[in-house]
Image 1 (cartoon, rainbow, N blue to C red):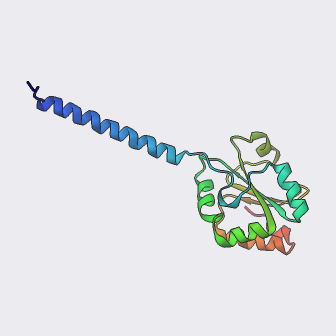
Image 2: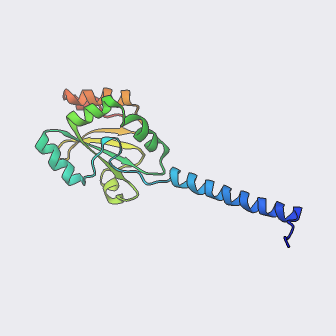
Image 3: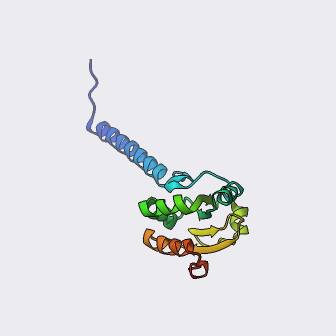
Amino acid sequence: MRSRITPERERIRLIIVGVAIALMFVAVLNRSCHAPTDPRAGGFQALQLTQAKERAQLEEKFVVLEFYADWCSYCRRQREETWPDPEVQAWLTQHAVPIRVDVDQEKQLAREFDVRSLPMTLVLTGSGAEIARLKGFHSAQDFLRRARILSVGQAESVKAE
């Protein structure tokens, strides 16, 4: 003998299935929006600052130090639009040892460099001297314009808001 499903029970079952699907959808969206950022994204290297400075000195390059946070929308935008640009990648490969610093994980380092807004991109010499500070989001073209000035030794004109 089969039990009949009443319209009321069918309605409750559909509501439960709908809620379950909605919760799974929210969980997937939440995970994708707040997934931790790979510090190597966009050609950045998984190095500590001391290692990056040592490599920069050996290779006679700059250290490009990007301070970011996973919750920062402009940081995500810079990671997705600026750093993957082929010309930016070429400049970084030729002239820099690029590393990323998560300010939520490296609070002391962010304080040492007086990071007050995000994203914050610093350009350092291999010895650690700051020669440029780029505050906020910078498009690939804007970053390249400033970076090329550094390449020819005019660091004073690169310090920018």
